[in-house]
Length: 489
Image (cartoon, rainbow, N blue to C red; front, side, top):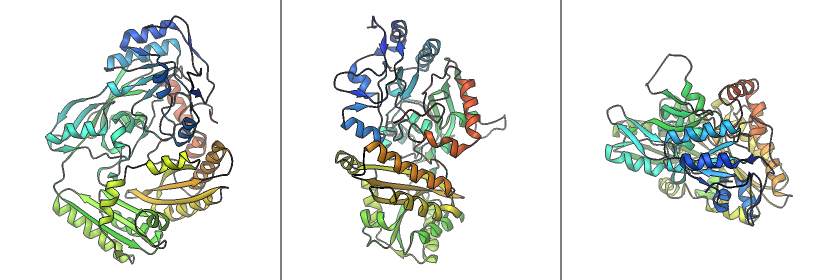
């Protein structure tokens, strides 16, 4: 039922207190309009649940009985028309509107830092069309990964996007954060998979972009919304490119004397045309921790799938590249062990509960700069007071470079927020200075917003201009992508 009195953002509900003290009034008339459009929830537990995502810093706040901030209302539209009604109503009322799906992001991108309305897309789910001939699937934004692949299996197709959050993330979230799956060296990032989008703009207009295999009718407007984290429009439907279900698989492991040798071998393989689904190189610390290393060698895990002839040629190319860099064959069973545990984050959660500050940071860089990026970031992190571990692995390889995924932890060095910020300031700025980009697949959200000027330079002004044009009242996910003033801590 509509509330009879205005609702304020940032007001504690029960024992849960907000982190950011944002206070803006949502009038009863707007709540009533939202309720008429698709139903509106103001249940305290629902609001608290939609006030956070999997940002590691927010996990520490949750352990302290806090959430980053509370929305005033949660809505769950089931159709694009209802999304358009919600957007138009919020725009007319000048009320912030933050879109959330599975809330599996780790950068605070789904946190409603200015309160307002949260639009939960998970009722906007299901597959609308499968074109087996063209290999295209049109799916609603709130559909979870397993549901999408289960629907495609009888058609002999798969999209092949398997992020660590696969079971708890949505298609719209993949697009919003510009995500990458663990098989991306074969299938590409979500950027490569999107053929077309349906997007609701801030004022409620519905836009259809893309849809053809290639075009030359001006800039690619679909790319404008991929990675925009809900700040430029609300993705409601996605047409994705799908692949035939593979009929063959091969696995291998290789051990290198150094991380640099492993990087060189990975580069050699990819630049000669080998694109195995999985090509993951672990430094000595991560090899020792998870893959049976002695603290000196580095392991490369390889998995490919598809046509038997193509898979065989790919694995041969990787083998030649590895041996040419002095690698010795490793235990192929390590690939199976990785597959079994690849999505398990329980250890990181357990460390957070014990007071450790733990997180990961992923960046991408050209092959020529990867060794320097690795050394600079690991060195910078280890110099932060309280840091007890800093390591990395290479994944998501491309013709011109690859992603480095860093893990780090600190303990007993002061307030959690200060330690967390020190670690990120050191690691992210070292990466940028050494020639890496700002992010590879976790997005910007709240956590990386303060680095956007350094990373984009004048490009941030262009992004701000686009924001002003598409969302003149600034209602869509305010405070993200460096488009507003910093809001934490």
